[in-house]
Length: 350
Image (cartoon, rainbow, N blue to C red):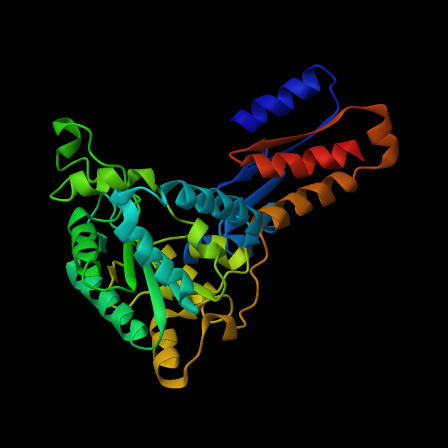
């Protein structure tokens, strides 16, 4: 509807040519859209058949591996510098001396693991429970015995009972660190069960104190010889694989209903072993063959944002020079992050 209105407006006011593009997770007829981006893992069997049958629609569709994101090595470097400065400021604070000492030991460890926890959703299709957390922590203990340091970070979707379990277990391990990155309940209203995206529980007070350290992800990816592990309910593996960070995906022990969340299974199959390693495979290799993160040589995932932008620019380049000179040419990008706009702006600036 919006694309139709925009195209109609440009035609009515003789404003020239406009390219309309849409980022979506479903394919519709899109009569007034010129370019449609759909991540491959979101394609259903029915959608694939439809694309085979509809040649006109197929010409408009750009299928990319992974999700569009603006994550990069530069993001990590910036956050790493900010985090390093924060640690310097806290050096003389006795409240953080124990945590800082433990983190310094982690930094000195030559091999590192960052466990980035996903979590539940509103429905019952993802079972992210303490049993799965026990499995992940057991994996971490095995790696610590083989010379690794491990950092756990949670997310807003990580269940509170999982958060408590990992944190409390980490207190007894000098080379396993947990840092809460989930918002902490400010009042009783935020402690209601339906507010599960907010942390509430027995560790509120200690987590609130450590808010001064803040979210240490993705800063901790800035250390050498680091592997980041994502649970397979999350799309974040696309970000780190695009940024050439050694990446693993953990799925064993995490139940996801394949009939409702086929996308998680599709993405895992697309990512492993080409762009990421299966977590259990890495644990076995690290413990039995002394493989390190820097030993992995995965293919770097092409940035879907760049692929989409370059496709849009290529379409603009196909407009004859005479038409470009005699009319205004514009690109209308819907549901897109700022970096794509900068790609298009650079095209107009040439």
